[in-house]
Image (cartoon, rainbow over all chains, first blue to last red; front, side, top):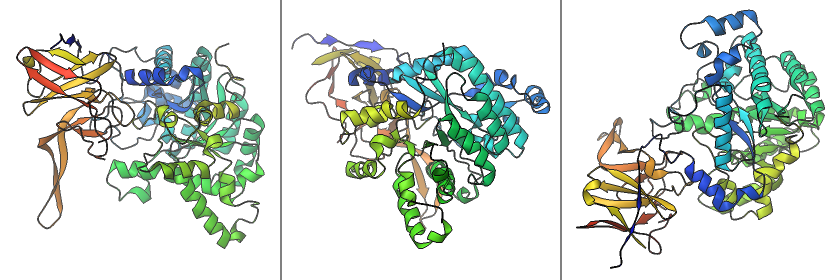
Length: 397
Length: 129
C-alpha cells in the first residue's frame, strides 16, 4: 500500500463553525464563475430590530416616538405586530452568525450584509426588513406611518449612502394612501432607492380610488412597485392549519394573490401602464394557477371586469416575479413549461431571501438545464438591471 | 485516492469530525459502532450538511384506532440535518428522509489498526441514489 495522504482535521463546531455558514456558497460562486456577469438579488433581508434604537430616533410622530423610546421590555414588539411560528424547525436550520461576529449597528450590519453578498456571488442586493413586514397589520395607522417614515429616513440617511452595492425598495404605509404619497414624494431620488414596496400582509383594497394619486406618483417615478408577502397564523383562513409548513406554504401566496387579483380585475395595470409590478417571495408555481383560474372566471363573468382590454393572464405575463423559493419539482419538464408560460426568461428575477430560512442560492437558477446561458444571466441579474435604476441610483457617491 | 484521517479512537460512538481532503470537506461520523463518511455538501443546494444537527427521527405516535396521540424522537434512527434548509438524511445510510432519490455523497471509510482511511474519487456514491 502506498503511503496515504494525511487529511487535515478541522475543528468542529456545529453552529458557528469556523468554515463559515456560507463557505459552500462561496465555493459555488467560484465554481460557476459568477464574477463573469452581474447577479442582482432583488430580495434580501436584514434584521432591522438590531438597529431599532437608531430607527426609533427618526420617528417624528411625538407619541409614537415616546412609545418607541420609553416602553419597557422589548420596545419594538410593542409597536410591531408579532408573527407566530418556528421558522427554524426547532433548531434544525441554522442561519444566525456567531456571537463573535460584528456587533449590531448600522455600519457593522452593513459590512455583514455586504460580506454575505460577496459570499453568495451577488453584485447588487435590495435590502428588505424582517420584522416590519407585519406592520401592515397594526391597528393604529399613525404607527405604520411613523415607523415607515423613520425606517425610510434611517435607510436613506444612514445605510444606503454608505454602500456601492446595496439598494432598497422603500416600505410604503399602504394603509394610508396619502402618507404613502408623501413618502414617494419625499424619498424618490434618494441615493440607493430603486423602487417601492407594499407588504402584502394587510387587508386594504389596493384597487380603491383613493390609491389613484399614489399610483400616479409611483408611475411618475419610473420605479417598480413590489408586493412583499408574509403569512400570519392569525389569518382566519389559516386558523385550522396547525403546521408551520402549511401556514407558510399557503400564507405567502395567499397574501399576494388577494392583492394581485384586485389589481388585475380592476384594471390598475391598464390604467397605470408605466408601473412595473413585482411579486416577491412566493416561488413561481402559483402564477400559472392564478392565470388559468382568473382567465376562466373572467370569460364567464366578463361584465365584472368591463374595463379590461386583455385577459388577466395577459396582464400577469407583463408582471415581474421574484423566483425565491423556487419550487423543487420532481420533473423538470413542469418547471420548464411554467417558465415558458410566465415568460420567465424576461419576467423572472432571482432573489435569495437570505438570511431567511428558505433562501435560494444563485445556483437554483444557474443549474437549471433547460435555460440557456443568456437566460440564466438574464434571470440572475440582467432583467433586474433593465427594470430597476440600479446603476442610475448609486448609494455611495 | 486514499486518505488517513487519524486514529480510530479519535471518533468515538456518537462523535463526528470534519476533514479537509483535497478541495473537499468530509464529515466522518460513528454511528452504531460503524464509521460513515459524507461530503459536506447537501444534494439540495450544497449546504454544509455535515455541520448540521444530529438527532433522532421525529415520529408520530399513532394509536391502535389510528388516532395521533403524540410525537417522539427516535432512539433508533438518527438523522443528519442540513443547517441551510433542514433537509434530513439518515445518518447510517445517507438517504434523504423527504425524497429517497437523494443521498449524501458517501465515501468508503475503513478502520485499520493504524488509522481511519477514507477513499475519494471514482467509486464514491453520488448525490442521487
